[in-house]
Image 1 (cartoon, helix red, strand yellow):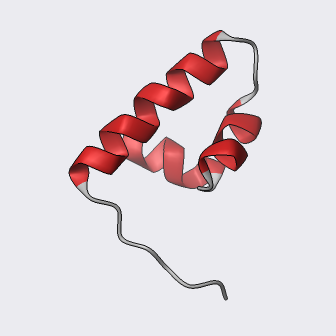
Image 2 (cartoon, one colour):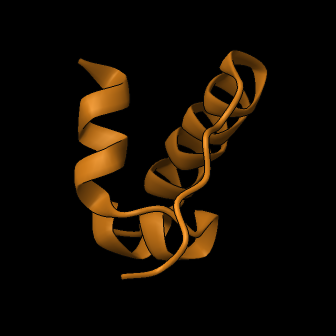
Length: 48
């Protein structure tokens, strides 16, 4: 298992905004997650 990283609230907000930008630019959720170095499931959970 890879090392786990705790993201601060500021990092989460920043990455969610960046994910929105990437998805609006035509990338899939999985591609956006890979670029942000988190899993697609993590992005889903953060949004929830």
